[in-house]
Amino acid sequence: MRGCIFVVILSGMLALQCGPHSAPPVSYASGGDLIRDMGDRRKNFQTLRATGRIDLSGRKQHVQGGMYVFTESPRRLRIELLSPIGSSLSVLTADESRFALSDQREGRFFSGPPEPCNIARLIRIELSPEDVVGIVAGEIPLIDTQGIVEWDRDGFYRLTLVRGD
Image (cartoon, rainbow, N blue to C red; front, side, top):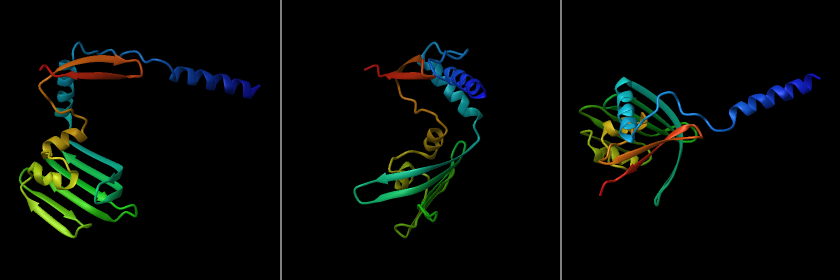
């Protein structure tokens, strides 16, 4: 009897988890409203710490291991790549006026201004420290476009950006 009650309760709990999700009480009339709200949330953001795993295969190298990202809005950034056994492979730091990168794999150290070309030495994409901090915080880069926002029944907003030209 207890087993039957457990199965009924478990089935009821699973049934509540499945199926479509209704839109939250705050809905967005346009993509622009959603983008503005995301920008407003960034204003409340001060620091962020994230950890993750990285598996990057390139033409000349393969990097696997852990990654730590520390940010302080708007421009302070630290990214550390670790080997699978936890030793440091690369450490990038940047703030308003300085950039430094220690690359243990290549035995090199770089320093200079926090320019996108220097940030690209580690992440392979030319982004300013502000852009990296924003992307890590979940901000989307703003482009000149029209946005269409829809609620997806799987439980998230879908923002489609359409360029006007």
